[in-house]
Image (cartoon, rainbow, N blue to C red; front, side, top):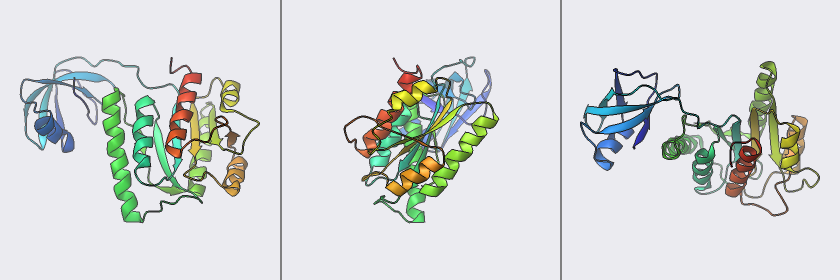
Amino acid sequence: MPRFFIPGNVRLGRVATIEGRDANHITRVLRMGPGETIDIVDSSGKEYSALIKSGSEDRIILDVVSEGREMCREPSVFITILQGLPKSDKMDIVVRRNTEIGVSRFVPVITERSVSRPEKAAQAKRVSRWRRIAEEASKQSGRQRIPDVLDVVGFDDALLLATREVARCVGEGLECLILFPWELETSQGIKGILRESPGVREIMCFVGPEGGFSHNEAEKAVRHGARTCSLGPRILRTETCALVLSSIILYETGEMG
């Protein structure tokens, strides 16, 4: 069943509207029209069946024909990938694959060794693209929410974001980790860190670009409370690292398998 996200709350017997790119997709790509049914997910994460009442390439009017279904497809642990900005379309892969398995937020980060350093206008276009990819992957994988994709930031600002999240979690009585996979870390694996924190509810994960993180960045991260860790003896490509990292976290927290 085709599935789309609707802003706001939806109720049985009410009218809902889909506009813009999704409306065009329904009419031009799926070639659906009045009388056909789609699934919609509102801002609360509830899923509804809706009947197409009328529509055009710009706007679809729907009749909500079912009660909201409480779904449980979002992981209990909130994972943020702070990804060192990679070259080419590798960030597309990072966003798509990690959205599919349950990552909650992405932060593109310009690091010391980032080769890709787009100007502000180009950054905005790329972020807009990554947000569309996150939405598409959420629909495909049956997610209840679309992961956030934040604007591109520098490494120091990324660390500040991570430490603020830790402070917020502590204030709410929750456990939060900052993980910093680094190829020069040999004494501590990610599994050991996760098993020391069975109740963790939020994890901020730094991933280096091609060339990895510098010693200066690793030292700075540790001063800000990050835990350096190993993902094994093999060197992973940057677009592979985030997926391996998030998969291990989801497995160790009981969200996979």
